[in-house]
Image 1 (cartoon, one colour):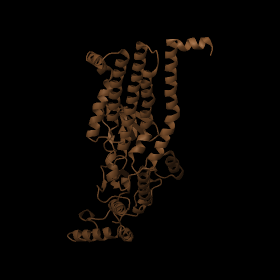
Image 2: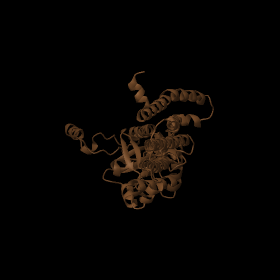
Image 3: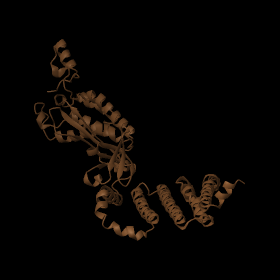
Length: 423
């Protein structure tokens, strides 16, 4: 052996350096070589078990982070076997290793909390009671406490030395974490009062949010809008601003509230021939028979004089159409009969007489709902001329051109031929 190597091995500093290097390499080999095989074997065993929580732990990488403690602890124990290691240098290495152990423990607790949240997400009550904000708050506390212990270990001070100084820093902490504290209070109130859940459809015009809630965190609520953009709203804003939650609609029904404006100049009494025609409508047979019998009994009290029409009650095309709409909707398989069901006239406007439909669909899915609504109004718009009525529509350039070409009054363009009024 060369002389310089012999002298180097006899040097205390070299012995300490070689010992620490060998110990670090051994710990690193255990971390990089032995640890993966052990984790792989443990994962195979976990997959064969029937319980779910162990798989959740692996998905959150809890065993991976806990296993990082083994080489750190071996490094600490191995320092006792390193020769010629000075007290000061040994103390520094032990403090550094202890700080790393504290950090790994904090990371392991972080993963354990994430695993607990993932397991909670599988429970039936999870959508109604999200706890993600509480989990994030616990993680903040864990890392804050860990940071204090790491600094105290590296500075060779007691942790209480640093904790006692937090009182003077409270004003600064409140200023820095103002939004976090407000969001925490808001998150607690939103959760306890069940105001919002993941999956709810909400509208918040102040932030241009209109879509499904996809995440409720400590500081933010993420909304997936219908145009597939993401709106991120501070949690505490839900207590400062109003918002609309459509959740109850899914469990009950989705409302259709739309009207058809009828040209009032087409409203008139029905002729006997038309009454007989409508009697052949399956949906109107009972209505016509009932109304004819009712009107006949009423009109019997007055002389049968054709010049005294004002003394008699008669069927109108608008009333018969409204009865048809009511019967059509009541026979529609996708319209709820238990919820509010109205077919009514609204106050006349310069745009005509509105016939409003106010009902609920049994299927609340957006695409299905729009299809049901469109089918209903397609049918009603197409069948209105059968009643001698016309949907009000403002004149267009085509109407003006047609009126000039045909020398027809503009109000009569496209209007169905009306039956002559009996005297």
